[in-house]
Image 1 (cartoon, one colour):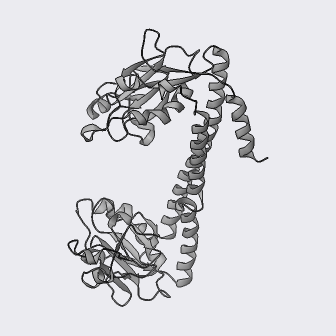
Image 2 (cartoon, one colour):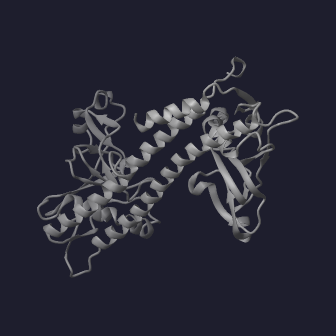
Image 3 (tube, rainbow, N blue to C red):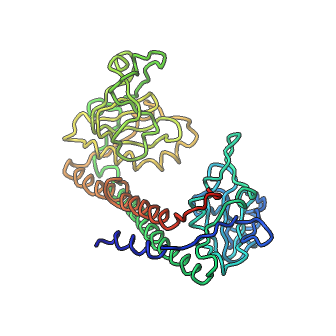
Length: 408
């Protein structure tokens, strides 16, 4: 019997014959929880009252933390949720001293001998999003809706057994969450290590190696793409030539396209068919200065420039990609006042040209780091995705209590 079969057998035994009572979260005289809202806190307030206690808002990055102040509104164990915006319905388990802003709600359990905070958190991580209202283009999950969400209480007539079941479900899901968190922490560390080695490997002093500008037409082809007329269906319909937009540039290799043009569309526009192992760089938009490395033949729109070595045996295309990718933070800082990058400026960029053997060595090292930190088919990102799916599978299985007809 494999591990998954043993787990399934254990879960069936844990939940076998368990009766479930469904209780609205915050309704009635003996409501199981009280709900609160946060308060308005401006950026200026956060600066003027800087301190040690976290303030949580509607974002999901950094666990929702937007700053720290010298006071706190809550102290203990709670659950918060995002009430407004794109993240409406996102729930968080909170502990300690903290405050929340006015786009957050707070749940305080009145009877912890009946309901476990972490159990409630895991249940709401499935259920809360189902109650978000998206009218008028602004998603919301207000307190009156949260109050109606029904919570499953296993073995309601046996509080001690109920809490044991809830605690065991929490223990299992915590284990999966902790494993994913550990892998994510490791990935963050590996990315920092990758950046460190990339900086060192791609740092060259003037006079240490030969340098070439991208405008040197003897060594480089530098072009921008084009967009066939959208008014001509024959340029697009049933097309089989990949066509990329600047959103494809994410400082990593690109393996597929979402859009295609026809042979006629290619001929009747300034789009160019680019060969595999071409470096791309976004000229404008949200991804400006970000790169991509083509792993297939493709065309691009006019918001992307392409860079291709004319002598790969002397200047390695993957080396070009890594070097320009490593310029991203510098370009973003030095050219922050520019709305776009153009070919004239791009052709002034200098590329170091160490020996072919040294280029190959650098590419081999960076390829290994790249696979470990970005590959979705292998490396840590793949492992994290597998663990996330495993967590969601067992979470849904553990929390799939049968609902009575009236509650469906």
